[in-house]
Length: 630
Image (tube, rainbow, N blue to C red):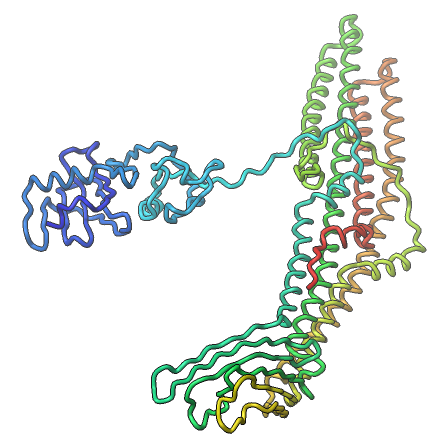
């Protein structure tokens, strides 16, 4: 009987461990047999290796094969067979649907989306190994994986582990970290810059592909008619070379033998075949431009446009890296200010303790100073956190030679360099420099040249197609007929005319190209205005930041003076702790305001340099350019 066949490899989930007296539903598709169990709490699933059908209904125990009852003993044998694992298939079988005895840990809900429900032959990364290297229990059938995905149960399938990314490491060496080091790291190892360079490589590849339209083509054919009244055998091979300025040169060899139809005698050649060569040139349409040259020119302008795109990305990356660097320097300066404030409070605490011991002040004054110390310690913890966070953000731009992010240490902190004021008279010249150097205009110019190719191709399509062709042929070998009509050299010249009447394709392409040119002209005008506005706004921000810095430094000088005066008065007993603490707090806030002003100044400086395209290194145009000209 088909249901008793043990050759089929099955996967069965039967709740034997939880309820030995109850069996789940098993179905054998293709065998015409169904086995049902009485009142099973959790249905079992049985299938062939390539079967994805699952059954979830439970019926009273019965076994039928196309209407014929099966004895109870063979039924038990079949159920026992389902509970076993085929050693040949090496597939794990679990008999408890609620407790899967797997040899690997279950996956979490977050990892569940990484599990691919693909055939087990597919290789999936798992802790640096392929699935084929893992135990058989880690390879799940697609149907089982899908069923447990729907129910939310753990399948025990090992998660697909994404390639591990090296974590940032502390920067080696105690040397100070300068902005030049960060910018050099961006130029050499920044991942997004490397991705931007690949855009140029992509454009270069498309440029080479466009030249493929001018590749020499080898053509051949063999046409035979061995059965019929006329038995003919024809073979030919030849070469075709497109010409860059239009047309093509072609030549080849053919041989035709057999009994040809009287109206196809031109297919017959002499016994040694025929050599043929010819030239076809356009006289009107496709003379100045054709589809092949247009594609090459478009690819050329796309390649020219890719270079300023890379440089625009580089300018943005250097600007962002510079801002991250100055934020890191500012966080370090504020941390030093917090340390100095805590040191003052701790030194004053020792003085207060001596005064309490001798009875000059009351103990609550000492407690108030301890409160100030605790407050400044908490503030210092927050400042240290900001230093660490800014160093981590800086590590996105500051990397090792191998591209691994480096976390700068506090020993590498440097002070802000002395700021210099801008000359307002240089603003017009700086705007002219920005218009000459900004890559956005070069990108638009290359795009305009590309659209001009579309417009020229549209005008070319308006013209009628008039081609001239000249072909020479010579048969060789013994004559194939008594007339010898194939033996003399033959020369054929002709003109071919093809005129589209409506010319809607050319008219549509011309209108689209004209619209794009007008659109790009408007975008270019806006880009010019935008560049001027960016130069002016960044110049204004830089000038305002410089003036604010001068006021912040004057405020800091006065706050430090008043704090020092208040401390001396307190030592002489002419002031109280509250007044000293307030004066010191004012000095701390003034020092932080100076750091904020310096950060704002150098951030504005980075924006101004980016507006002038000063972060455009000459080596960026050549270092990553592939040599792949055809």
